[in-house]
Amino acid sequence: QIWEELGVFHYAQKLSLDDFVQEIRVRIPKTWHDGLVEYVKHVYFTSRQTGVFTRWYALDDATALDNALRMAADKNKRDRQVLSSRLDLERRQKQIEEAYGTDAVRRARHAVERAQGHERNDEIKQRVVFNNLRTKAVKDEQISLMRQSVREKQFGELRKEEMGRLREILDADKEGREEDRIVRKKKRNQPYKLG
Image 1 (cartoon, rainbow, N blue to C red):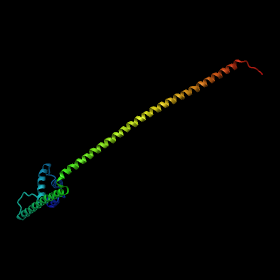
Image 2: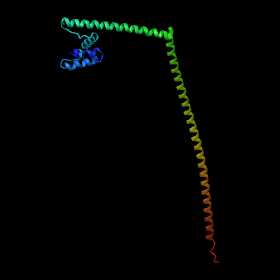
Image 3: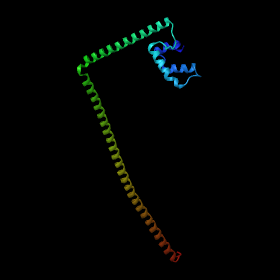
């Protein structure tokens, strides 16, 4: 019954084995089990190949004749397709030979070798570019570290100079206060003159 309804779609390859199995599962859910899948595959592919669903009972003469005619037509169709495929293959081989000569295999192999050579060259180029970038990055980092050490050295020298100036200022200030103290002391020690 399923094949009568949907067999045309399976024969024309619009539906698949999974669709067929799913339809059977839906129609006989209580008696279905996964062990039936192999039997269903056999019935499905046999029916799909011949276009006639497998029967296990005696058919009337008209149905048997109809099935035999279908099977003969299917065999005839497959034989024509095989012959057509072979002729098509010979035609394509002849076209290839005319286009490339008898050296088609050698030329194809040479084209593959060239393509592989290009791939190797591209890998080498990428490696060289990567190495150049890595070398440049290392040099840039070294230059950066040198600049940093020069700047730290310069800042250190500037700090020394600044500290020296600050020390001079403090010393000058200290000397100035010392002189002021001495002057004040002298003034204190001198008697006050009215005059």
